[in-house]
Amino acid sequence: MEQYIIKGGNPLVGEVEIGGSKNAALPILAASLMTDETVYIDNMPDVFDTNVLLKAMQGIGVMVNRTGRHSVTINAGQLSGQTITDETIRRIRAAYYPVGAMLGKYREAKVPLPGGCEIGCRAIDQHIKGFRALGAEVSIEYGYIVTKAEKLTGAHIYMDCVSVGATINVMMAAALAEGTTIIENAAKEPHVVDLANFLNSMGAKIKGAGTDVVRITGVKKLHGTEYTIIPDQIEAGTFMFAAAVTKGDVTVKNVIPKHLESISAKLTEIGCQISESDGCMRVVATKRLKSTHVKTLPYPGFPTDMQPQIAVALASAQGISIVTESIFENRFKYVDELTRMGANIKVEGNTAIITGVDRYTGADISAPDLRAGAALVTAALAADGFSTVDDIRYIERGYEDFHIKLQNLGALIERVNDDKDIRKFKLRVG
Ligand code: UD1
Image (cartoon, rainbow, N blue to C red; front, side, top):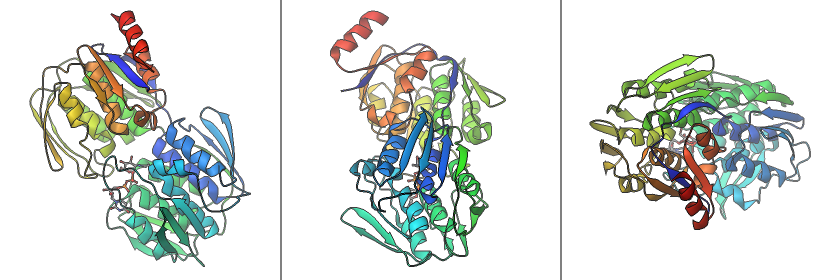
């Protein structure tokens, strides 16, 4: 089984190029289903989730041409149907995006419901409520979400909770509905804005994305486009916190600093120096980190997808910190693993009370989910001695070449297949 073997203790130093946003790429790829014309997409991350979605789209007759590792042309002019049967798609959360896209374009869709419960129960009631408000019938049958509409009519929809997925899905369906849709209490994440910009570049009329009221005036059809996906805010944040945890000096390149404000504010609070220049952010950590409190919130609040990374930093900081998770109920699964590396963390409900320890020590640990997996790797990079990280398939769902990018920053990390590889690594690095 593939694992990372890591020898900790080296500060990360250097520059790292940040890829395209996974969470923007997924709805943008799905939205490419909404035109018969060819769409060209650039800065697409080459990760498990995007590849699974593209494969599922090919399964219903979408022409996908990888023109480069990060670029793709998509033509959905000759679909064989609106039912996705590719079961692998169930493994990714974004499985539901083709629903909004195909409902908008074809007035019907049948897609396997996303499974997995790594970080919480992840209801889809707001997606369903939105589709129904537009006039669609929606049911869950035999593990599929099935939806059909005679016609889609714009509606005024108030989201009961701030949901990235529901905002995006309803936006897609409404883009080709008749009349105007208003989504209130919409999610404001950068990837919601990126999808709106993408759809607008195809001829949609969406205003207000990035605020909590999005106004969509339906159009009859969408056309082809060329589009570059925004940089991945969470990948950037992960490397920034990796710099902090390892007392390093890392510059993340190709980022949008505005998207990283909540992350850089916390890094400054815990004692790092942050500087910004032209699409780059530099994080320098020279002293022991300081404690702080943090609560995850929808954008522009501190992202839930950065919660494990900041907790890893705080668990080695001076003093007591409190981390409150307000989005997903099951996002502290990494705490047991981190405890095995020496952390002192007590979880009560959605709160972790963290007493910083002087140092981590290496251990054999497993990635419980995507972001927690990446965070545990950063702990292992800071730890004394060797660690192995198992279940790295989770990490590879959302981080492209994670270990290679870390190696380029001076980390002693390798992706290995068996004990022989581990022994070789240990002999080599001593
Ligand atoms: C997306 C991101 C994920 C990120 C999350 C929050 C993708 C593929 N994933 O997930 O990385 O952690 O946003 O920023 O982009 N909820 C409901 N009913 C619904 C929908 C959501 O109750 O119909 C709840 C969820 O259980 C959760 C909260 O709303 O508690 C936020 O979920 P949501 O924003 O929808 O997350 P995702 O879109 O699944």
